[in-house]
Length: 437
Ligand SMILES: *[C@@H]1O[C@H](CO)[C@@H](O)[C@H](O)[C@H]1NC(C)=O
Ligand SMILES: *[C@@H]1O[C@H](CO)[C@@H](O)[C@H](O)[C@H]1NC(C)=O
Ligand SMILES: *[C@@H]1O[C@H](CO)[C@@H](O)[C@H](O)[C@H]1NC(C)=O
Ligand SMILES: *[C@@H]1O[C@H](CO)[C@@H](O)[C@H](O)[C@H]1NC(C)=O
Ligand SMILES: *[C@@H]1O[C@H](CO)[C@@H](O)[C@H](O)[C@H]1NC(C)=O
Ligand SMILES: *[C@@H]1O[C@H](CO)[C@@H](O)[C@H](O)[C@H]1NC(C)=O
Ligand SMILES: *[C@@H]1O[C@H](CO)[C@@H](O)[C@H](O)[C@H]1NC(C)=O
Ligand SMILES: CC(=O)N[C@H]1CO[C@H](CO)[C@@H](O)[C@@H]1O
Image (cartoon, rainbow, N blue to C red):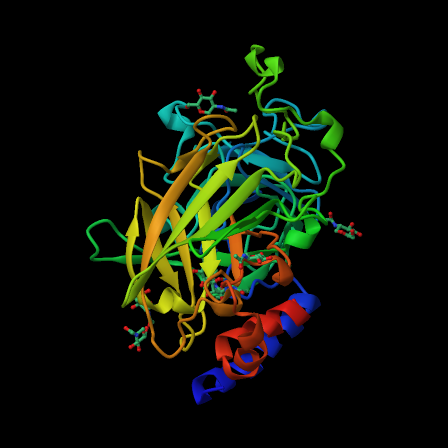
């Protein structure tokens, strides 16, 4: 192994240590969703707060039907009114005469408003049906806000009690939120940028994602092929669990002509095309051409769910040669460099209005790209599966890779394998991945 690679070992060990300990994504170690409450005025019986949700995750967005935020009031607070969002239930407000609160529940559940509500119900960054882009894809849309007027609450920074037990669905489970923490008050710049104002008090809540909370099975899988071997390495059988196998639909079934078959279910249960892997998403990585100084990979993403269009989808890949991406066709690409020294991860996403919508299963349910990579002569090899990715994520969830013994192999390379095994650092890494991940 060369010295640069050996310096990485402690980091990989750290990654493994962390990923087993708690919600921690080694490819986006600082990713989180932060919910900030800025008290912008005190009222006779409480306060008005501007609540801002920032998605600091590089590649995990909140897609339709959007976020759902819940919390528990510390005392007997009520919500007098909201702008830009609404509580899903009013609850029992029977003890109020005259002016009735918007929500009297002890554990309010709040959702964003839909686009197109009247202007007097809107504020900046609201009313997007709860859809929030990922930071890596579009930082300007990675934010959602609403305003809440709280009553029967503390009326100063000494008496106010912070809400507790925050929960976030985005739109499904997966997020765990920490306690609210008082932080330095947010400072605002006036529109002419000549005066600063500040919130009377600010608290933050941080939520992090763990795929394990969502399902014990992956939600996507990866298949491989190469120009040097006719074998296609398929997704592992039952990659995403086969418990729904009886409900899947053959791609030639007449049922597909039924009206309404593509309508999403409230709980988002998929209607999958029958495959041996039973995944809603398959990512195919094809090693296409080996030039003298470059090599070319084709990546295709296929949707097998008849009930789902993926908007603003993201695909993350980890491969040592992503430090020398020369050109990416038909997708946008951005390197992710969470550890300054390692540049082996990048995110692909669709071009706006062209292929940022991955259509439901069927004829149009796929998107594809080709990637041109410059070879580093010291590491490039077609042996030992080096040309295939170490990790693939779709929409922030890690996909199931084929088992290492199924990778397409170079013809007649069998006897060299053992030698290159100990010499080739790329292979060492792969071996490491195989054994420990
Ligand atoms: C949340 O993410 C931001 C941006 O990556 C980071 O600066 C901040 O430290 C994170 N917060 C926590 C509590 O991890
Ligand atoms: C609180 O959240 C905001 C984003 O909503 C972030 O900019 C700020 O750094 C956070 N403060 C702390 C102390 O984490
Ligand atoms: C918060 O959760 C804890 C444990 O689940 C519970 O005992 C407590 O009553 C909750 N508090 C509020 C204000 O919802
Ligand atoms: C509360 O407000 C007082 C001034 O009214 C200020 O001095 C103090 O720092 C504030 N405390 C917090 C936690 O914001
Ligand atoms: C997916 O998008 C297309 C085009 O916008 C639409 O016709 C179709 O009904 C959508 N399918 C689902 C399942 O939402
Ligand atoms: C990472 O690699 C990409 C090319 O794939 C390059 O454009 C980028 O500058 C590199 N970043 C760092 C920090 O080395
Ligand atoms: C292609 O790869 C497979 C393993 O995936 C291997 O069994 C087969 O022998 C290879 N084909 C050739 C021509 O080497
Ligand atoms: C062959 C080649 O261009 N290698 C470059 C790959 O990228 C790293 C840094 O990202 C450069 O240091 C190499 O020279």
